[in-house]
Amino acid sequence: MVNYPRWAIVTTVVVALLGVIYALPNFIGGSEEPVDGEVASQPSAVLPGKTMNLGLDLQGGSSLLLEVGVDEAVRETLESVESTIRRELRRRGDRIGYSGLRVEGKGVYFTLRNVADSDDAQDRVRNIEDGFELEVNNDVNFRLEMTEEAERIRRQSAVEQSIEIVRRRVDETGVAEPLIQQQGDDRILVQLPGIKDPERIKRLLGQTAKLNFHMLDETVSIQEAENGNLPPGSILLYSPEDDGRIPYVVRRAVEVAGDRLVDAQPTFQDGQPIVSFRFDTAGGRRFGELTSDNVGRRLAIVLDREVVSAPRIQSAIVGGSGIITGRFTVQEVNDLSLVLRAGALPAPLTVLEERTVGPGLGADSIEAGKTASMIGLAAVIVFISISYGLFGLMAAVALLFNLSLIVALLSVLQATLTLPGIAGIVLTIGMAVDANVLILERIREEVRNGRTPISAVDAGYRRALTTIIDSNLTTLIAAVLLFQFGTGPIKGFAVTLSIGILTSMFTALMLTRLFVVVWLRRRRPQTLPI
Image 1 (spheres, one colour):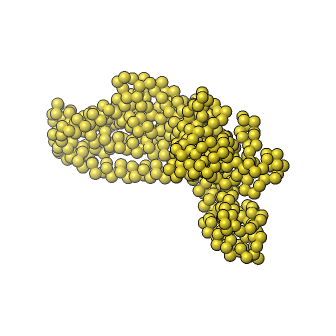
Image 2 (tube, rainbow, N blue to C red):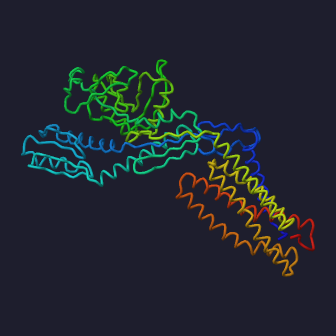
Image 3 (cartoon, one colour):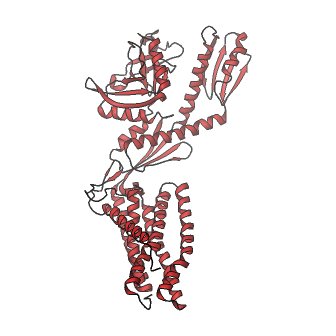
């Protein structure tokens, strides 16, 4: 016991000192002002600068409840099937006459003009899309109906994809530790700690950012289109309101989809803010073919069913990149680039509920947590000092180091401290002394059995080790499961509890043992004050 290995001494001292050093920025030298969801501090030239992130309940922020337009996602799937059917029936050199192609309910309908084409038409449309069932009446009336299972999968997929896209967009803004999770069948809860501009976040999340490239249909005038005389396969779209809502007749077929974008960045052209974009290899090849085959015609750049630009193709664009121009501000260009990089939402999002949590509530919670922690710490120190004397005081000093290690790890890992997390720290204070109690009771028992001081201390630590590991390991397993399967506040509690278990084992088995070894070497007592 007295022959404590040098490496263990060095390791224990270094870890304890690092805990104090990395915990200090949370108490001194920080401005503690939230910046886009992070607790910013002004690091000194000597001390580490990271501080704990505070959750929504402590530093304030916004909580949004979003509804995913799953019906719109289903509708888009049906429209995609409709476009595919139109393309299949209009194959060059082998066209099949039809009429009344439309989306109705959960199916796509059309009627053949010639019954002799029935078998050929069935072959072309039967396997267009998984999850659709083909029904043919009188060999000419076709209905491709979406199955209930396919509809359920499409709805759930729309929600899951929306959660992923929302997470990417929020991460791009720099919000620290946002909470993004599904609620119910078609809703998403988004909690954003410490944001300064909730309206901007709402705009970013509410923008579908579905960017597609279509050819303009120049076979019909705008006046005819507005009077309802639209050619089959064309739609009437408008430019954004800032551009005066200019009408365009656009071919429905998507020539190049926006999901082929791999990058979008804000830049300037002739002093005006624009967005430059770049396709992946397949998208760049398709864009090059499109511009090569349509030189002199106009290409519509459609963002969320609005024509942001409709330039005339002057020459082939084979580099796989291009620009989006418009009457954009610098902030709009930055935001548009952000949402294009993050990807398009599969369905529109609607803000159902918005709650703003003020930092005052968080400040009260922090003060209450500090008070509870201090009271709990003082009570534990008094109890263990009265019960075990000098050895109890050593355990109390180790408990202070334990708290500094918890704060240091939360800062280094940039974990988010929530109100339940404070409860976990308070609980850890009570639990941290358990290991010391087990060791000291073992030492006291060995003294009663007539062992010498050194032998009693050695036996106490050795025999208590297994019990300490078993008890803390079972609690740690429970904390890990809470973190894995819990959400929101449960995770905050699990994080601080897990860290507290690890640090309490270190301080009990290493730090207090070091204190005892140093005292035994210096005093070499005949009896133990325990």
